[in-house]
Every structure is written in C-alpha cells, then in structure tokens.
Image (tube, rainbow, N blue to C red; front, side):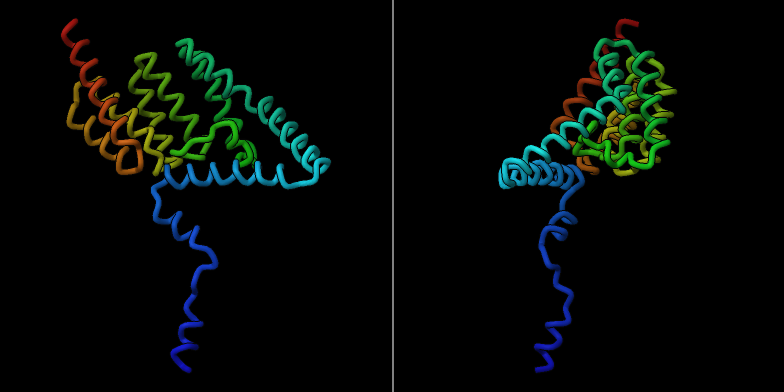
Length: 211
C-alpha cells in the first residue's frame, strides 16, 4: 500500500510534449511549435460553425494587415537587401529594431519573422543589419552587430555562421571553422554549414589571388 502511495506522489507530466520539447534542439523545437500553431488554427477554423469561423478569419486578416503596416520597415529592408542597397536596408532594419525595443507587445509580431533559429525579432534584426554590413564590406560594423545579436539571444546560431564568413574573409580559417562549429552545435544545419564555410574560404582565396 505504501509503495502504491509513493508512486502516486511522483510528479508525472500530464503530457509528454513538454518533455519531448526539452529533448529537441531549438530549430526542431521551434519548427514543431510553428507547425503546431498553424495546424491548430486550421483545425479550429474547419471545426467552428461557418459564421464563427468567418469572424475568426476576419479577425486574423485584420491583425495580419495591422502587423504588416506596423512592420513595414522590416519588409522594406528585405526588399532593399535583395537589391543590394545596403545602406537603405541597414537604416530600415535599425528603425525596425528600435521599434521592437520600444513596444511592449513585440511577441505578437513574431509572424513577421518566423524562424526555426530564433523568435527574438531584435536579435534577428541585428543579424540582418550585420549581413548588410558584410555586403557593404564593413566587417568591423558587421562583427559589432553580430555580437549584439548574440548578446540578445545567445542560442541564435545564424550570427555564428556570419562570424564564420567574416573570419574566412579575413583569411582566419581556424576561427572560421570554430565559429561554424558553434553554429552547428546550436542547431544549424551541418550540411549547409559545411557548404557555406567551403564557399567562403574559396571566395576569400580567390579574392586574395586577384590581389
């Protein structure tokens, strides 16, 4: 009888999901969460009465439009970046970062930048600013912003990928490999990491040969 009572006192989790999430690396965990939310919304819309589903869908659409207007700096920055307009992209990303820091409901803006590597918009914006500084070949500023991104989110692997690229551009292959290894340890795709590192080292060697 005492043994049975002891078993009853063991704090078994009500669901295995939290335990499984703890076992996952961050990219796997965030992918699971994003997909769960999407499936949940879909199931909710398909199981509600038609009128209630229409109201909910209207609310989601209105929220999406408000979010797009509020986060237009991010969208414009991405467009500038694709066009290699580095300074314009940096200015817009900086405005978006400051806007996120000033708002109390920044968690609701995650739909603007869903990522399996980080859900922190400030860290993502800082990493994107750094990527544009890399494009503009201002590596010192890029490193500064990458360090700021990691200070905000130490488990964000993408800044380490960019630090690895910068190290390769500076012909420091040892540091480049170390930073890329850190990115993989934090959950970055190892195949993609190897390909990016190989290309960065090859591009740096080619540039040195031209010099």
